[in-house]
Length: 110
Image 1: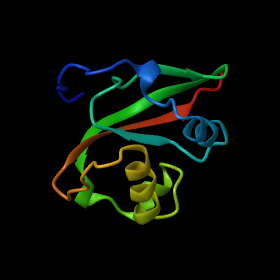
Image 2 (image 1 turned 60 degrees about the vertical axis):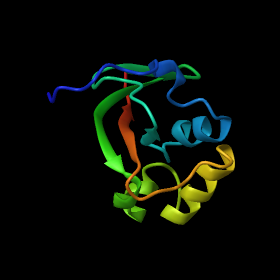
Image 3 (image 1 turned 90 degrees about the horizontal axis):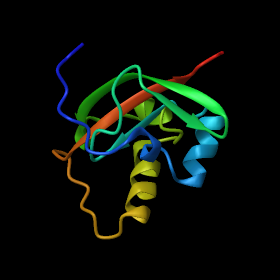
Image 4 (image 1 turned 135 degrees about the vertical axis):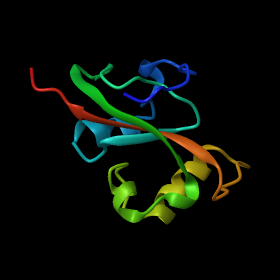
């Protein structure tokens, strides 16, 4: 496993927006991008009684995003995702070189 810097937040804050929670519960969202690191690989997030295990955590620049990756976020295109993010963070710049942390996860079958 690669050497990751310390987490900047906790896994319980990783997916909190009601729309995003619903996308995860419906199986349409299997990744989330945050400006900090919220989880380690192997950590478990619980949403409405369902458990999701983080499989991968890595950094990516906004300029590297493509529509296929954004579909794992639950959105149809990079533009749709960008509009959603900017609507939640008014005044935030969207710069291709800005780095975000990608957290990929999947539902655990108990």
